[in-house]
Length: 480
Image (cartoon, rainbow, N blue to C red; front, side, top):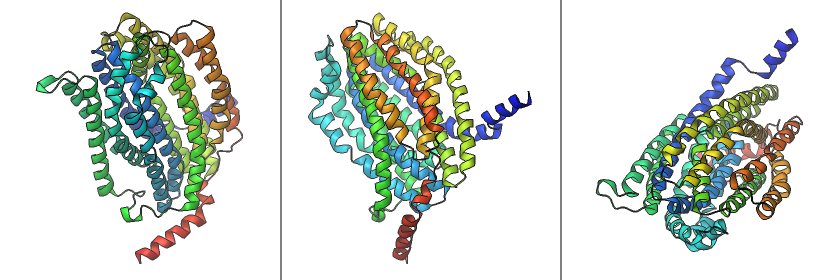
């Protein structure tokens, strides 16, 4: 009995530890929940225009999703270093990490412009191969994406500032800004999609304009916070290009591996979405996309667990306390397992709102949406735990786990599998999704054994101490 109690004590941390973790995770989860609820309201409003408009917005939204994944990946990569420099109380290192986020994030503006403005028809048509309503969906999708181009730069800068605040454990400011921006988005949707209160009725274009207005307001608020609060990562405009080349190169190397892994994932998801869309007409596109709009209500667990894990582990590693980091790894994974089980129940409860939110879609679309939500609820324990595993590895700079396990399985197993299912079977999109996602159980097992090698157990700040000291001295000389 004593052995069992000791084992349990080693598996779970103290109440104080989990309270600290939740203090980081909950505001992020609330922030993402608000964003998801507003996205759900957006989908609800657009769904009132019918399956075709709903499909057009969501096909175009896939492009924005890819762009957002890129920006978030850049911020995650820079955050690996920023969090550890925060733990080491190295202000200059934090500034270098923030510069990296901005430079690499804004680098995507050109390809985003080409996709949204120059070649929208060609790109969006790839998402609708085999769909019986392709031509009509494309018309609505192109209208939407041409306007959504204008959210690119404002969103990038906002995400860089918000993520850097979270890397320092400051989660309340991003939450408040998100609430303001999302309420603005909802109000503008109400006014512009259907032309309420005397405003013009703009349909899908109104939804895009509402998003641009909200993202612009979000940027303005974040810049005001940045200038007034002057967080430790903040840099003056005249010092923006004072980049530590050696450190930037190291961050770029880590980023390349994380980015490769994330882009493989998003590429595979985009391929699967295109193949799902080819299994019918607009009902399949709208049904699948609406299911993810609802699933985002319980997917908030991912961001909360990931951020809390990264901040806690990264801070311990940056302080050089490797033994504490090892214990925290076990405690956080145990907590993630419990959280995943809780989210199964939350997921099932969201099926009740499917007919309420998407009642104006076709019966076929509603049926697809409901079954997809049920299926994704079942997978929550696996996905939440897997997110925590990834966060632990990346907090210590171990980006190889994602590349050598996740990406390889995706390229050589998942993608061939989904093409085989599409070509050689007639199963529907929901069953295709189930078969493909069973591979995540294999990933979680491989991640378990990878983490036991403790490649992630590393203080990155020590590796760059001399370079950072040199830059600090230079800045000091300039100030003198």
